[in-house]
Amino acid sequence: MNALFYVLLSVLTAGGIARRFGAGRDLVAVTVFFGALLLPFHILGLVELSSSQPVASLGNALLLLLALALALASALYLIPAATVAPAPSPAPSRQRWSFLPWLTLAVFVLAGLMLAFGRPLGYEVAAYHLPLSVNLLQTHSLMAWDGNFPHTFPANASVLWAILIDSLPERLVSSANLLLLVPLVLAVYTLCRLASADSKASLYACCGMLGVPMIAFSSVELGADIGGIAFAALAMCFVLSPLRPAPAMALAGLCMGLAIGFKSLHLLSAVAIGLVACARGGNLTGALRNASVFGAAALLAGGFWLLRNAIELGNPLHPVGVPLVGKWLGWLPSADFDPSLRSTTELEWVSNAWQWLAYPWTESQHFGQNFKHSSGLGAFVAAAIPGTAVALGAAMVRDGLRLHRVRLSLLFAVLFIVAAWALLGDRQPRYVLAALPLALPLLAWAVTQATGQWRRVFDLGLAICIVAMLGVFLSRQVLQFGDRIVLSQQTTRSAFYEYPPLVDSLPAGTTILNTADRIWHYPLFGAALSNRVVSMPAGRRMLGLPPSLSAPRELRLAATPLRAAGVTHVFVAGASVTLDDCLQLANVAQVDRNPVNGKPLGSPRVLYAVRYLCP
Image (cartoon, rainbow, N blue to C red):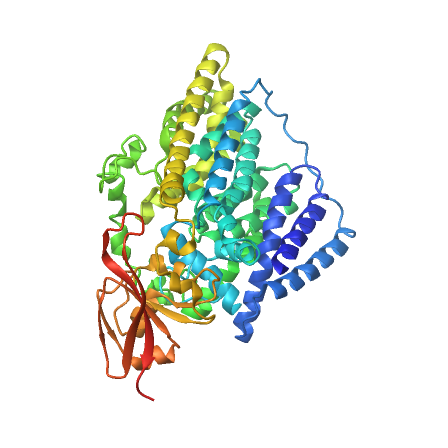
């Protein structure tokens, strides 16, 4: 019940503040709403850091938000409304193809309905995003679940899912990430209009973006990618907006801090957008003012996660080390984070690094995957890049740079993010995703420049690409729904995740040591989310094994560390187990056959009850 009041109060706070703004009221409302949801937890996390007392409960967050809302309401009577500079005249609107936005909306609504018949999906979702959410609800702590990679990343996404899990059925929470498409679409449409694109081209850009596989398939998993790029794009909206500099930079910094809280990779986006903010200052004084307001707001909104890692783990960017100066400062990578392995991840998408220059046309078959649905850019982006590059380059040569300041700012940010991604070495396509919402307004502007028959050709070509990529997304969702729900009837939680049903009926507080792959972390919490789970990486440390993200194949279980951790059950899938003399395991439940076709599994999934023989 606290969660429902918390969300309602966040809505009221956002609406009250947004009323003080003439232009960009919808952007302000979305930003303040998510800030109101997340920042009280950050403040409670700071209290926990200083007092070592876990206080990050929903009840405390509600009281804190109420106090902040009352303080803001009082302050708004004393602060004049934020006025805006004259906004540039938008490009004329042209007749739009209204079916495309409605088709896109229908596709994602249908996807959300299908998700509601299942449970949350995704490897990273089950491995650490949702386990962190459950840990927050159980312990009221925002400290790292354990000290292993990747449980120390910023966890805004996990905080959001925790708020929802506390008050909504798990099935409904499965589709919650789709809600973050709202601020993303709002940001992209606004950037398109700021770049002087007409409304039809702007809508095409938004629909095309939603059909990009990296966007579409990320939106149906409870991850952190969509939230991160949405707030990074909103930050650029405020930087380029006609709002007065002080509120614009404060709101941009707030969005940037929220983006960093979703994914620390957006520290790179913060540099790119921060440089644009400085350039918008006009002179040295304006640049310094913009930088200080933007930086301070970003630090206040996203700095908790960096401070937590610095105090708790000795490295604010944990688990990533800091190049060049990391050894001097002691900011070293996590023991189970191997940067050398990151240099080969790009081979899943291209054969050689130079092929990124021609991506996505060079995405070929690797590891048995001809088209990796969850990573590619898809037909819309592939079709849009050449024409946009030619049109923008020709216009800048023809008109000079001064007439293209907004578009030049977007282009600079895109190129900065792409260049930083290329230099970092871990070249997975989704790690450069922040550049996409900033690039699509350039496409929308280029399409707006076309007239007559050329415009009709561009519209038809882009519409075909949009429909095709929405078809790719929806067809996979339908196949997954038909397989898991309609044919296999995996409607219960234990059947959906394929674990022993006994896990759901264990007494509250049961502690399960997971010795299998990390994807079992979330399922083992049980249907009531009342079990405690010792993560696989923490289990390796407990058993004296070297740090690794791979599950051990051989287990030597000892009574002393298991008793110290309060372990009552052990979950094993595929590992051989030996015991010391003070320990006994009883097989209380197992899944050894495929629940759909009845064929034996290669590795039985066994839940053991632990019995301690020595006092």
